[in-house]
Structures are given as structure tokens and as C-alpha cells.
Image 1 (cartoon, protein in one colour):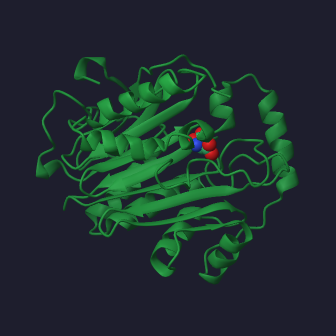
Image 2 (tube, rainbow, N blue to C red; image 1 turned 180 degrees about the vertical axis):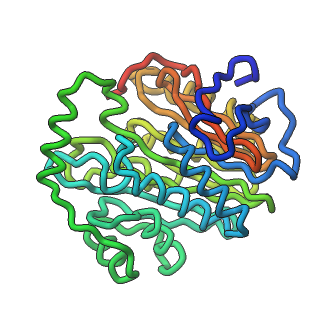
Length: 330
Ligand code: ASP
């Protein structure tokens, strides 16, 4: 994406930092790397990512760690029940009327990762993922095991009236609104800290009406999220089945390793997937990425995929024209 094609969607009006200017780092080709004074760099999926970015930035500027920034940024989206997105316990129930959450976290130094899937009744799945990474010798816990681990770790649990949620969701889906926004969303949030180290996290309730036990791309390392401290990081949102069959985030990081900018890498990954996939570009997959040099970018098959970027002095929502049609990909 170059400067002239970028479309600024929100900043000052929605914003903490109130600077109605695009971050200089948001570019693949023409912009220079970020100056040290502009660091850190944070990018996340969807407009609701802006509040998460702003929180992550606050954590970093107050001296917090990159992992605290990722975790506490994502907390904002996980607790925002008014957001009409499918992150956290206010997200979309599965076909049995139960909200099952997927999340993962990854830290560049040490190449560490933690993940939880099909987790029920825990307020902050991102925290459960972080505890898996930091406190166990495993990478991924699922279902009841993940829930018991989270409870043992003292994470907040919430009694969920899943029947009521299901009824609410059924009513909502009768309303005429875009299928995409109604059915699924994920926060993937990537941080390039001022010291050059990278971390990322991802959290979602997945596709609305999914089969009980279905796990999407979001908690799968290399699919919904991937961090390589030598190169950069990528995260995904969209129809998980169309991301996880191609290890989407890993692919993007590898393309950046070969010299592509974040924007170019996201675009090339989508083109490559579309060449292989019988659905072509009708996949509903969207990616964000940042690299070690302080550049970030995005691409998606959804028309006008929106994502949020923050640096030390600027924060806003950007829009990507999209490589495909507005299709749902389902
Ligand atoms: N990728 C998520 C999933 O398939 C949903 C989304 O991002 O919209 O579970």
C-alpha cells in the first residue's frame, strides 16, 4: 500500500492520541523505517483494535513489557461486550449456544508460545494463553483442561447463560446487517517494542454457530499468529478454515524474510492462497503484519478491511481496499 492509496478512517474522533495523521510506518514500499523516537509500533485487526492498541501503548510507555502490552491491550477487546464483535465472552455462541474461546500469544525472544482453544467461561483467554506459555512446558491446552488450568491459575471465571446468549444471537442475525461483521471477528495484535523485540496475541470466539469443539486459526501458531524475532510478525482474521490450511501467518513472515515488505507479504500470501484454493479470492481472509524494521501493513480479501495502527505519537484506523470481493468466504 502506498501513501496515496491509504484511506484514513478514524483517529482524532475515536482516539486517545488524537493525531489525525497516518503512522509513517504504515507502508510497504516507499516510506522509510520508523525513527527510534516513533517506536513502539502496534498494529491490530479491525477498528475495535484501536482501543486495544491505545491500551498496549499506554502499558509500554509506562514501562511495561511487550507481553503485558499484548495481554492488556487484548483485555480491552475481550471485555468490551458492547463492541458487537466476536471476541471474549460477549462473542458469538456455537451451534449448541455455548461461547467457546480461542486465543494465543507469542513472544519473539526465546520463540515462546502459548495457546488455548475451545475455552469456556474464562473472562480473558489471552491471559490463559500467556500462563500456558509461561507456566507450563506445553504450548496448547484445549477445552475442559484449558478451563481447569485457567481456574487453577486464578483467572476470572464467569457464569455464562448460554441459552440467553443463543437467543440474543438468533435475534441479531435476523437483522439486515453485513454477514461478515455479524458472524465473526478476531483481535490479532502485534507489538514491535522500542528495544526491537516483537510479541503478538490473538483472541476470538470464532465463527458464530460453529460446531461445538471447532477450533479455528486464531489459537494455532503459524495460522492466526506468528512471531519471528529476526523478521517480524503476522496475524489473521476471517474464516479460519481458509487461513489454517495454508499456515497464513507463518507464510507471511517467511515472505518478509525473503525481503517483501509487510504489505507486499500479506498481498503475496493471499494471492498464493487464492491460486491454490478452489474458492479463489472468495475466502474472507485478512492479514496484518509488521517487520523488524518498523514497517507495517495489511491486506485482505474483504473489501475495505480495516485495521488499527499506533505509534508513540499517533493512533488511528486504516482501511485496505482488499484484493477480493466483499464475499463472506463461507
Ligand atoms: N478467524 C476466526 C475463526 O475462524 C474468526 C474471525 O477472525 O473472524 O475462528
